[in-house]
Length: 132
Image (cartoon, rainbow, N blue to C red; front, side):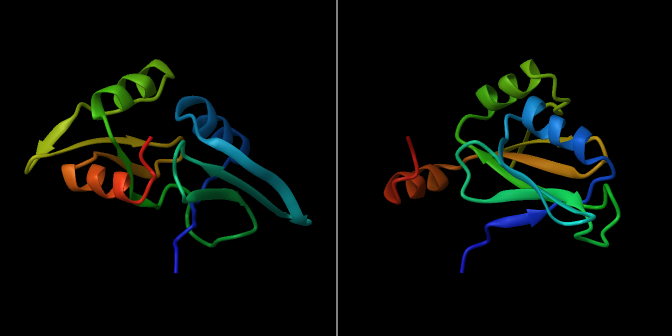
């Protein structure tokens, strides 16, 4: 089993689509309306095997109620600098037990965590071929 898609509840699909693409650099996989009233917008973070989906007619979750999704990056300083240059509002980096974390929210208040990769994350990525 692989976790491949996570729904993120949003109020304004177009605003959120712009945020994830422009501020975070997510790639648009598709934006379709399968049935009337059900719009599915799938976006993938750069280098990720998992995607998020935003849209209408898919979930009963309240917009902004999701918290704790983590994006792991190999270089926290570089990732944070890039996101800030795109206009994203990212917290300062916090060190917690030797691991770096930073935080941000989307336009609806869904809360995300950026985690700096640990040496074992980098080793595992290299071993499975996902490191570049």
